Structures are given as structure tokens and as C-alpha cells.
Amino acid sequence: MSLDPATCYRALRSRDARFDGRFFVAVSSTGIYCRPVCTVKPPRRENCRFYPSAAAAESAGYRPCLRCRPELAPGNASVDATTRVAQTAASLIEDRALDAEGLEAIAARLGITDRHLRRAFGAEFGVSPVEYAQTQRLLLAKRLLTDTALPVTEIAFASGFGSLRRFNALFRQRYRLQPRQLRRHMRAQAAPAADALQFELSFRPPYDWPALAAFLGARAIAGVEAVEEGVYRRTARVELDGKAHLGWIEAALSPKKPALRVAVSASLARVLPPVLSRVKALMDLACNPVEVARALGSLARARPGMRVPGAFDGFEVAVRAILGQQVSVAGARTIAGRFAQALGEPVATPFATLTTVFPDAARVADAPVGRIARLGMPGARARTILALARAVADGELVLLPNADIDATLERLRALPGVGEWTAQYIAMRALAWPDAFPHTDLGVMKALGTKDAKRVLAAAEAWRPWRAYAVMHLWNSLAKDSP
Image (cartoon, rainbow, N blue to C red):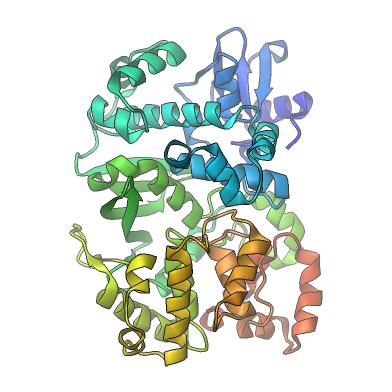
């Protein structure tokens, strides 16, 4: 968004949740920056400075507010090409790609030069990628100090710092507090249990959690996922520096705040940035429902705040899409459960319904086609899954939110057995492409009252660039017919 000072100040005065995370306000008289929804008394207009990101505010010398906690602000989804490049880079930075690969490698993964990436990133966030990464590490550390009982040393490494000394020095320099001082100041409540790390991830209301939970529950892979009494749980596998970290996550709607309460097993402490990033993508927390509703009009009125379920693991969702070709939701779920049980890894969790981690692409790529076919699918479909696994394992296909949509769709369509429906479904969920539209889907056609794919496309033009959300509303009207 354009940071028009008058608009920003009005949003601040009214604590308008629609602007939460879209800008941050810094107060020159206090040296502190806040979210626009902060509950403190609004500062005088002449003392306010507005920034597009928390990193930009910190780069200008401001400290984060301890009340509204800028690290909890929701992200931003966009269909603008330049913005998506910057948002994709930000997601990769949160996943530690900058530390592991460097900026040139990130730019190459996005198909652009590092110079173009720096320019796009600066336009979106007001700082360089390196400055953004440093702020993200500090804000994560601040969150862990406040919300968990992890020792400070573990927090330093979990946040991406190479040493405790560097962490303490930068924290003190930026926030004018020692980490332990912040923890004492913020710890008014009892410390969370040591076997699980608790977080709140904010969103912009409205948020149709019942619809999202129902969608995920109907497609939950046995042993890998479960939805019970409005709580979503799943196993998780995240690699960092060549080591696989296994564990579990849990998400439920907060009863008092526009946020999800998320629990993460302590075994995932060292990979928290990618874990939280994946949860945000899975739950579509960056959506701006006002923009979507404006585009969809009457279609969205029955279920305001409908979200497009994303992916915790893009490869898992892509496999699930292939398994769902020409079979019912229940049938695909059964086969997916067998697939996970046969090729996945066992994991210990406190939940009887969570026993298995879904296999990664490399593991599937090594499986004989006959073994996959015997799980209950035609040989051609098993070969499609193998081709997908090899492309992902070799790095030829990257299934991440905000990936280059045109290039990725082209690579998907080139795989044997992947048609337009499968490619668009993967784009909806694994790539978080808000304008994805599987126009040949039978449920979409039934909801629109036509079997003519061209008429479906014509009818959907009015819903651009948010056609993926239109699909969710159409499927919701015919829930049993959705894939």
C-alpha cells in the first residue's frame, strides 16, 4: 500500500484491523514503533512516522512496542508481480535461505538478478534483505523470550544467531535491554510447558476458521493430520543444515483475539522460523479479506472471511492432488493414508492420531513404481507421482508460496499425467496463488450451473485477481463435491 500519512493516521486513530501489518507507526517522542491496532493512547500526528515494515522502523532507530508486539502482526498477500517477488524473498529469508545460500542464490531461485531483487525488496519493505533478516532474527528472539521457557542460549541459535555473544550485543544495541531483562519484564504469566512452544499468529478479521478446519479435516491424511473439536494437528519434518527435525504442531482459533493459537513441539525449536512460516501459509494468515470480498461481491456474503488452505509441505499437497484425480475426497484420503504409512517415517507425539511424517520427495523418488501402484492407484498415476518426486528432489520444481507462477505451472504441466486441474489445484495451495482457477473442476461447474469450461472461465473474470477464493466459496456451496 501507499503510505499516505493522512490515511495511516486515521487507521491508527480508529485502530483499524484492516491495516494491521500493512504499515507500522513510529513515535519520535518515545523512540518506539507500534502496530496500527496498538491500544495505547494515539500519539500526536506531528510525532508519527510511518514505515512499510518493522525492519524499516528498526533501521530508523526505533524499538518495538512491548504492548502491541509488532512481531505478531500478520503478513501481506499480493498479486502484484514485484510485490510477490519481495514477499517470496522475505519468506525464504525467514526460512534461513539467506544464511545458507546467500542473496545471489535466492535471486537465481526466483529467476531474477540480485540487483533486481534488492530493488524490489527495498520498494516493498524499505530496507535491504540483510537488514530485514537481522530484524526478523531479533523479533523472533523477542517472541521466544516472551512466549516460551527456552533457555536464552537456545533462543539465540533458534533465531539464527551464530553465537550467544553476537545475539546479546545486537539485542542490547537495538532494544536497549538485555534478553533476560526483557523476559523478566514480559513474563507476567506462568511459563509455558517445556515440551511445547506456544505462539499466537495474527490475522485480519473476518476469518472463517470453521470452514478452513472442515476443509482440512475432510482431507486429513491418517497418521499425518487430524482435526478434532476445531483443533488442527499434524506431524512435521523440517530440514536445516542437512539434518531432519521431526515433531508436531497444533493450531486452534484464539477465543479472544484475531489470532490462531499455535503449539509447536520442543523438538522443532531449532527450526522455528520455517515452521511458523509454513503454518502461516497453510492457514492463509496473510489474506486481506476486505480486498477479496470487494472483488467477489455477493459470492462471498454467505461466508465472510473464507480462506484458501495453503500447504505446510508443498510436495505433500502436490501428491495429494495427484491422488485426488478422478476419485472422491474419501477415496483420495484413504490412498494418501496408505501412501504415508508405507513411505513415511514414524514420529513420537502425545496424540494417538499422529504417528507418521509424510515422506519427502527424495524418499519417494527412490521407491519402485510397483510399490507405489500397489497402494491403490493405476500404474500411470504412480509414474506421475514418481516424476513429481524426482523433479522436486532434483530442484527442478520448487513448490513454495509465491514461487514464479508461470514458470512453475509450465513445469507442472510438463509432467506426465498432470493436467490443468491438477496444476491449478497445486497453484492454489502449494504456491498460494490467489488467482488460481481449476475451471474444469466438476464441483465448480455444478455450482455455476454449466458444463462448458469456456463459460466457467468467462464467469470467473469478474473475480480476478482472487479467483482461488471464489473456488472455495463455490466448493463450500457444494461441500461434498469439492476435491
